[in-house]
Image 1 (cartoon, rainbow, N blue to C red):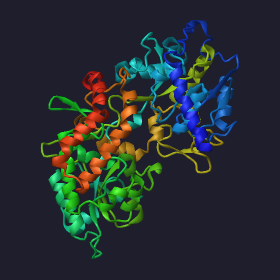
Image 2: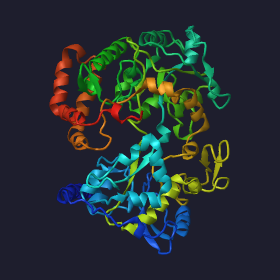
Image 3: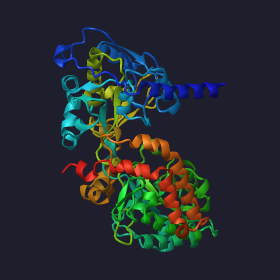
Image 4: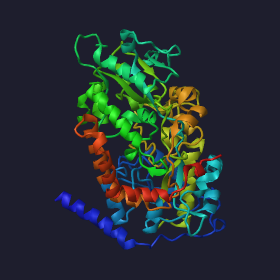
Length: 562
């Protein structure tokens, strides 16, 4: 019965959006000059708020809520749905019961589509500049003012569909390949001379970093040794070079770079726009992975393993190669249990060697950039029935929560009382004490925050060790310039129908892609003889329509700041 009700509600959501059509929420154009001065909180304002972590776990009358209500003279109604859940989001959209300010993580509808369907209102630039001056300054400074061009109304360029965030935590490149260095030492494989520990304690003394890059051919020889030469010394044939997963391609993010490929960004090949999964270089990659599989270098269990279960398998100590994000290597709290650093936790003799991405036969090297063009991304939207007076008050709250250093207590409480500095006071990682909820709950931390980390917020969020690794390699400008693989075209301003077309075809295309990848690597199909049929099938099942939309998007080279 519950499933039928949910299906009905989701169907209602579709009908609701179809009925809205081009209704569009009104662009509220009251001049900012006619509204109260910034800081004038004489009239009490009611606002239903959410944030980027809203999962329905916030407690009414929480600590942050009380302080915000007193500071800004507002009555806050909390949002008690899980905004990360697609079904709960769909129900909220169908019912029209959207928070006054919201960020729906994972939502496929663009801010333009929300507004077109009458669900949100626009935000005038003069109100942003008057009531959120720190946010406005961030837009001025980042990428030569690119943020002012994002989420603009085509009917009025001084009206915006959303408030955009700054993903400073995603700067640079994220991934690096690692090898079991203790295995290399046991097998007599030469360790790069520049390999040095990234720290002195807590396991960091057993994580070594080098600027060396192995070629794919050199890596293959190391994986062969890991597989055939009993690197764990137990006398059993139970080790493997590498362990892919069946749920994504992160396991190959740097290997793909050696073939000149991102994981999912479009690219140019032979004067044609393509997606990586139909690139000739991807065929070469799959062929090499099939050969490695046939040689036994790849754990055959990979076809049944997700990322999570593969991490658990890696921790058993039978796998020699694994990619790692810089935050994993820094052992940030939220990464506990993730490979490859989980082997450091479980085996006191294990060592890791962190390397630069592999180099391909033609000298290619790199990995897909986390952000396609700019660090500006994610957003907060304003519900259609929010008045100018309510918007004015919210913008001031938004500026304080997300851009004012005094707003630190909205996410970490009072430093020293509710949280502790890991390093320099005011300019290092803040860790909430164990006796308090880190998100939402009775304290309300992060309950009203956007996904945006300008200024010192990046340092509050990011472990000092991660920043050290970024300064050493992952965010060195020359490294990023050479190794970050960006798309050829990107619909930064949502000018095409790409999102809608992807919504129609992505599921069936992913099935095609996953089946060919699995069958190709395991040898169930002959990659060379079946390749052309696979590409035609992909193009004829929506792939060409997706490429056609990408062709309408701007060149990334034209979007990047000079």
